Amino acid sequence: MSRGEGVSLCLSIGEIERIAAHLKEDLQQQANQGIRKKDWGQAIGSLASMECLDNFTYNCRLRAGAFSHASPEGAKPYSRRSVRIREMRQAVMIEELKNKRGVK
Image 1 (tube, one colour):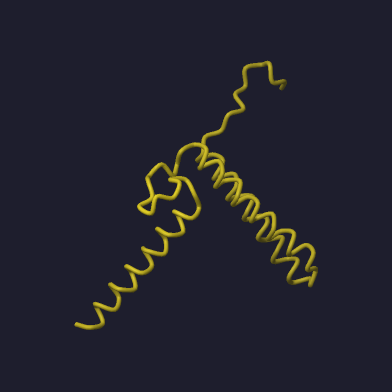
Image 2 (cartoon, one colour):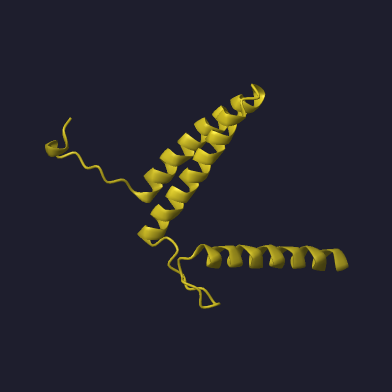
C-alpha cells in the first residue's frame, strides 16, 4: 500500500508504548542470549537499544503532554528532574510509613 491510499500512519501514545514493550521483550531475550553465549557485544547492544526505546517513548509522552502537572520546585513541568524528584519523595513517604508502622 502506498501512502496516498488513505491509510493513517499516526499512532496513539498507547499504541507506541505497546509496540515498544514488545520490542523491549525481544531485546531482553537477545540480551539474555548474548549473556549466555558470553557475546558481550550482543548483550550490550540489546541493552543499549532498550534504553533508546525508553528514551523514545518518554519523548513521545513528553510531546503529547503526558507530564502536564507542575513541579513544586519551579522546574519545567515536563523535565525528567521533576519526575525524579516526585519519585524520590514518594519513596521517602513510603519509607516513613513503614517506619511508623514499626513504631506501634
